[in-house]
Figure 1 (spheres, rainbow, N blue to C red):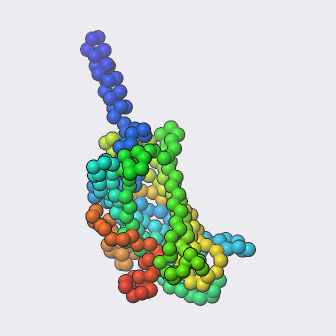
Figure 2: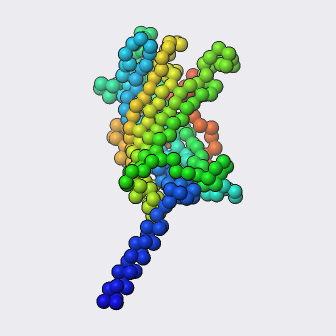
Length: 294
C-alpha cells in the first residue's frame, strides 16, 4: 500500500510538474514563443507553408459588388532566433508568397482578363512577392514587455490582427500629398487553433487556421484609369504539415513558373520587401520579367 501511495503521489507530482511546464500567457518569453509557433516554428530554418483560398470582389458606389476572381495563395516561410542584449531572444521571419487569380467559375488560372468597366482585355499579373520578411518582436522591448493579444475559450484560441497601410505609392508621382495617389489598403488576419498546441513546450509549431481579408485600391494591372471603387479579398486557409500538401495544380504552377517558391529565403535575407505594387513597377520598368504563359 505504501508503494502504491508513493507511486500515486509521484504521479500527482509529475502531473503537477507537467502542468507547471506549460507555456504561460503571462510570461513575455513564452508569449514570443507562442507567437512564433503560430507564425512559423521554434526550430530555426524549419520551412512552414500556409495555404489559403477565396474570392476577390469589386466595390463601387451605385452598383452591386461583383465577384471578380477566385484566388489561391501560398506562403513558404521560416524563422530565425534574434538575440538582443537588452530585449532578450526574439525572432525574425523570412518568406515568399504567391497569390493566383483564377476564373471564378471555371477556376482556370488566368493569363488575361476582360475588364467589364473599360472593355479592355488586360494581362493578369499574379502576385509573386519575394521576399516578405518581418521581425516578430522581443520579450522585453523595445517598448513594453510582450503580451498575449488573443482570446481563449476552453482549448480554443484566436487572434485578430489588423494592418492599416497608408504610405507613398511606388507607382505614383512626387506630389501625392498635394493631388492624391497615396497607397491605401488594409490587411485583416484571424488566426485560430488549440491552446494545448500553443502551450505545449515540446511542440515546435502549432496547427493553425487563418482568415485573410484585404481591401485596397484597384490592382495596377486592372488598368481602371482612376475609376472610383476598390477591390476586396475574403479568404481562409491553414498551416500545412508540409509544402507537399499544396494542391497539385498549385505545385505544377510553381514548378513551371516559380521554382524558387518550394523553399523560404535564407534566414539572413536582407533584401527589401516586395509588394504587388513594387513588383508591377519593376516589371513595367523592364527590371524583371513576368512568367511567360501560353
